[in-house]
Amino acid sequence: MTIEQDLPTLRQAIIPGEFVSHSGLRLPWKFDIDLLADEQVRQLCESFGFGDGAVCGIETGGGRMARIMSDTPILYNPRTKSLSIPLHWSDEVWLVDDVVTTGTSLVQAERALSRAGIKVSRKLCLLDRTSESGAVIAGIESLAKSEDLL
Image 1 (cartoon, rainbow, N blue to C red):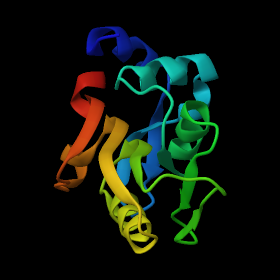
Image 2 (cartoon, one colour):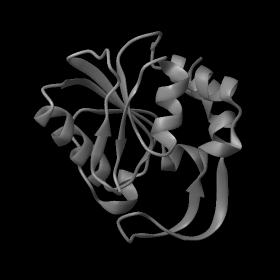
Image 3 (tube, helix red, strand yellow):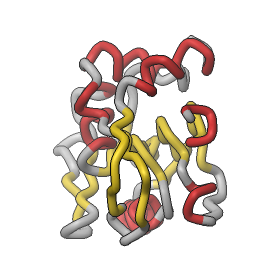
């Protein structure tokens, strides 16, 4: 798939309204990955060229992506700042989340993985909203930016 093919699927998960991000930023809409079927999420993830492999998902949206992409994902919970590592894991992973707005969860997850001796080889998100928060995150790859969807 290409970005032009992915945009209609991504737009299906947009909910207009007044929302507050995890970091307290007021937003005029939100992206809800739960509005997409597993097969749609799988196709979006495959747009990154991802097959089977080691992945760490940031809960909740990135956790869903990770469970779809891998039988044994590592999961990061930003509320408790904890990792859930399966019995068999890799020392290198792709770090995934559905949306990145300020990048706080992404940075925290990468630090937690580093403390566990796990290297992040790629940082991926379906939707990059950093232009709305002013955040600058090095090395993040995304399928779309918020301005692509509106």
